[in-house]
Image 1 (cartoon, rainbow, N blue to C red):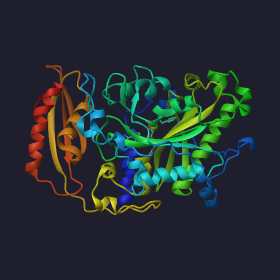
Image 2: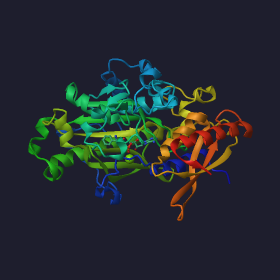
Image 3: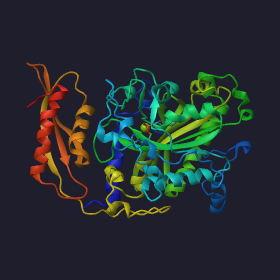
Image 4: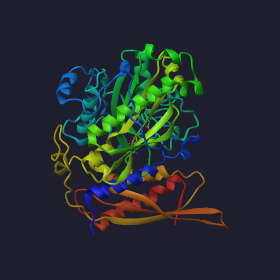
Length: 452
Ligand code: FA5
Ligand code: MG
């Protein structure tokens, strides 16, 4: 029986949970925590009252006028590959990634990513608190912004060149929008803000992972007078204080309201998570057509992050969500590569402010090719994935490890990968794929492997 598009999208997003880049690769008990439901609706003290998701649409329009825009709302200045392709020994940005920067999909009013971004901003504009909006920041950030300011230690796997695109030793393509938290906190201009943008990660290749995607970050600080009891508290004393509970509950309530705004009333479930920059940290999943899907990470901002941003006097929360994941569910878009296509059979289907189901144009047949090689100890899978995308571009739909064994005599390990080639707009011929596969077989030797 044929799977419906929506069922197919959901099952692949459920699989996307196995993403290996997660910040939660920390030695903290979070990996073994069990999910728990929020049984109790938070009743906010009147002093920090805020609107529920049922905010009236008239107020929504009124308030949106007060959303402060960042100075430039265009990312076109960033569409300049020479900014990313420096002749530096540690530059690992390939041309096909440099070519994606500055496309500004999140600012296109008729693009699914832009439509979701503005729906989220609208929700925050409907709340009785001003959120400043930044969505055209430079995607080049420093290691200090992206990692150190967020307590991500030097040895964290998320910082390694196998996971991150470095421009120089100290500058990189941001791997998450959290890279902008500290500068906005430090500027002191606003006690609440949203920040959206394109982020980049070297990662596996399949229909729900792409090396460039979009995130939207939210940060909210609380008035000092509501946090007097927390003054000077750190560590467990702080996390077990009633003030910390107030912030965590406000965070959860705000995000539950956001999900209802996007999806209508949905079942939700909170789990503990781990991020070096928030504590406690949570992950939110929503139940959509029978499947639990991870949509965001969040938490109470770690006091050291605040003090490094010269805001030790304040407390607050932060969250970060993936726009593609929400858009794939809401628009029923089955493949993450589609967001980047300029084919008007895709782009013409969407218009500002409207959530409509994507109608697939015909799916062209795949061509499968296997490649097997002996690997050196230094082999990095992401280097191999990237090499293939560099040679064949977006027609590489998926790369999966199908066999692996170690020859005990030689002490060598062999890996065999199956590559699925499929174009989104035409039929491929076996002959043209053979040419690409031959080039891959030749160039993969540069990674120190021995093709079998
Ligand atoms: C972060 O990136 C944190 N910066 C989020 C955060 C912000 C936590 C502020 C606390 C406070 P994570 O790596 O889990 O966390 O990514 C956040 C979301 O981005 C995920 O829930 C998912 O929706 C999306 N996402 C992550 N990796 C990918 C990917 N490869 N492709 C598409 N979406 C992704
Ligand atoms: Mg996560």
